[in-house]
Image (tube, rainbow, N blue to C red; front, side, top):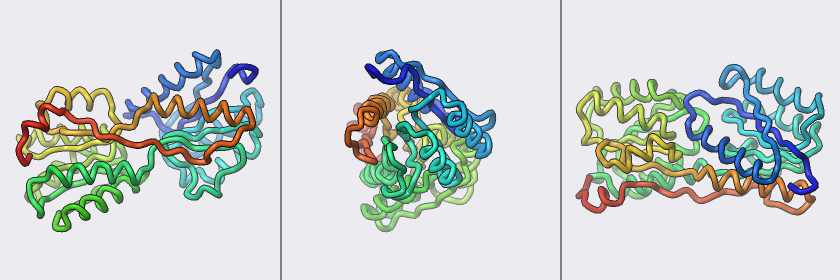
Length: 294
């Protein structure tokens, strides 16, 4: 950012069990460092602490040291008013990443923008792939999810039922991005009857599903995740677990796009208010080309 600020802030609202998020933070740091800009990192002491996140935002505007930066909140519904106030008081550009902070484009304050993946399109991408590989038109699918990314499970169900209307779908949205809770959910679902596939709306929950299936000796059930976390990619590439695929959010592409948006906003150039990147499915192509039905 030649002629621009020498540092930029990054505010996040949660870090626990978020390996993909740490990867994104690392890429954002690297892209900024390439431009000679230091990244000032801020997170509340407790995940999802709304008051703590508000204090962080208020501290940035009150000190006045940082005039541009990035915000990554996983619970925007509870922070909407605070984010509006923060953007107005800061006066400089803010790029929101990963999770959309506002439901409508017209809700975005001036000199703000968003880059990331559409929660619904992530779910649709996963649902279309699962619809192609399920063993039959009346298969049973369980979704382990959270309440923060409802669009992922909604898009998944929409696409899956468009492909296979007879599919039986159960949803547990209380797993809160947590591996252990997802494991418990899948164990309980196995006790209720036949199961063919599990969709985890992030990779941490997908890995919890894998744990449960291995514990129950049910590796005939396949799992699909979201994010492209390193542990998930390694399992898929090894080809010896129930984890068959993950919908990848390219953290490097998000970081590059976010910094480019910051360049444009700092220069007063026009930008798209919302930039959505295209999700892709990562799978073990050797395994998928040799599998039949499953």
